[in-house]
Length: 547
Image (cartoon, rainbow, N blue to C red; front, top):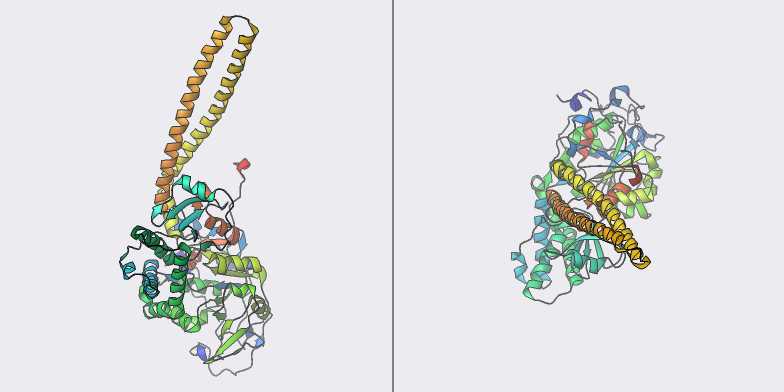
């Protein structure tokens, strides 16, 4: 038994499921108990007779931190802002790409096929079926320039440093001409920000079709092509083509995490209340969550027993911005939600203010875990003081590449240090050359004789050779650095390099992760390696003058 298993051995869930909900039959509670109406807890959640409230914190037997140095780097939880889980009462989760980790190549292939069918119906040639679509091409954090047909990657200053047109890399000089003359406004109609794994398929199709249609010499508009792709893939989602296929083949499209149930159980055993807040409809949510959690732990008869609140069709990011009504599912009927939230019920829609009011808790007492920068993380952070954790599925690959290229990164630092030293010497030699030139001019005009001038000329000649030598060394170092940077980039991704970095800076995507996510990690079950009351501490942030 691992340390994480023994850590909670024999501990039951903190809150026993209520038998009053017809959807939660099979609970361990005796059916002979009197069915007394629930009373509301201070948090606004009903407490049934015999049902314990959230456990008093901290619990000494749960508070000890697990040996995190034994956690593989790719499975660690990384910290941008200090967070004490002992101060958190509620932990909420998105479902898609958070609790449910999709098989990305299979999802991409499904979405591409559905998109092509609809593009052909819109009048595109049948030949688009036979184009090579490289699903390894896109990553999150890219920007599509719908005016010029380019796909861009920016650093944290919104400066474009990589670009592809179709499947051809745009030269650095052309990037400078096109994008370095002014500041790029990410919200402009011309650009489209790619921040979800769902959206990668549309980038794959767009780049491939730009390449193919240009090679065929067929006239088309870049923005119209992108609009057709977006509308086609949206239509495939709306009409059920994609979701129905996934729901019927969950083993093919979803990677089941065997540690997920234990992770949720440990949080509940530490007194945390859990909620699910997803944009997916109830029918899809029921199938997906059953696939993920049903039968995983004997203490939980159904997946719904893990959660104190379930909200489907939440409509994020509108959930955080608007005042949408909260509805309650009652069998096939949907009716306005009651005065308080009842555990075991399924809710739909709603808004941040209403849910916080009904819970009786909000702000930093809530941690929300999601995968979408805009829909889950940015909006929950901007419109509330909820703490945030971001699931970045790509982190496992990112950290593996980072570990593999440690030698190259160290060599890169050495080369950059040598270049810095060379540039310092270049400035000194240039200054010396200018001083000698002025002295030679002064001697020539003062008529003091030839000997001092000849000595200075000889010295200037020597300095000039040194100047040329240093410049040559710097050119050689710059070439080596550029070559090594490309080599390191390819370790992370063949086209775009690191997801979170661009050159020496954070990428635009990495910058948003740092700004809006308190924590980030590759999957929810990574939290199992840490105490459920963990105090997550961020590394000391240093400015350049402190290095």
